[in-house]
Length: 177
Image 1 (cartoon, rainbow, N blue to C red):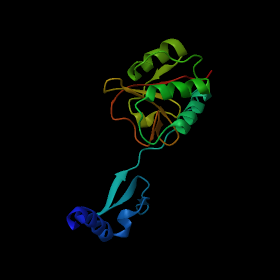
Image 2 (image 1 turned 135 degrees about the vertical axis):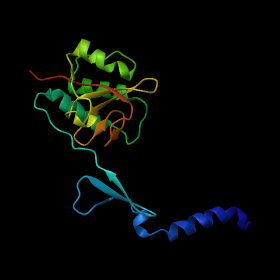
Image 3 (image 1 turned 180 degrees about the horizontal axis):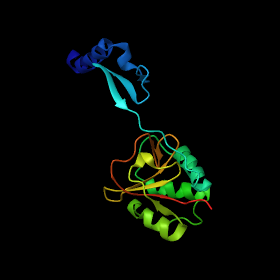
Image 4 (image 1 turned 90 degrees about the vertical axis):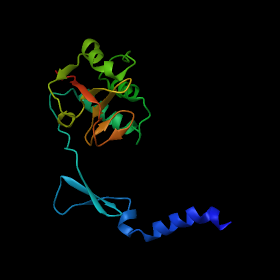
């Protein structure tokens, strides 16, 4: 009978043996550095770079800034594989587009935004340099990925501090008049 409980007992013993800092749910900042965060682990700390802060561009249409806030508010912590649907809904709710975009695949989003809704492609090749409110379109997987740059990172059907790892097709925005 005790054989069935052996894995459970080993797991409990391993948890008790861990240092208290390793089981913490928050992260610690390093001494005076604003570019790295230190995450506790069993062997010490893991240092990871912070993503750059988002910048504001006064030329971006205010409706896109509202779309970024809506997308961030509606996003889940993890992907639901419906990025383009959530971005379309955020753009429509904010008034950045006047009708629900009709394309099905995320990698087609850029061309539709340009041809039907007055967006322009920005000459930005690094997602972290994209201004708040811009729409980032990626190629990869079967349908691609699309997300909106927010104050604290990126949002589509999920929110993240880090950009998508797919190949960036383009950064699109509607410029205010």
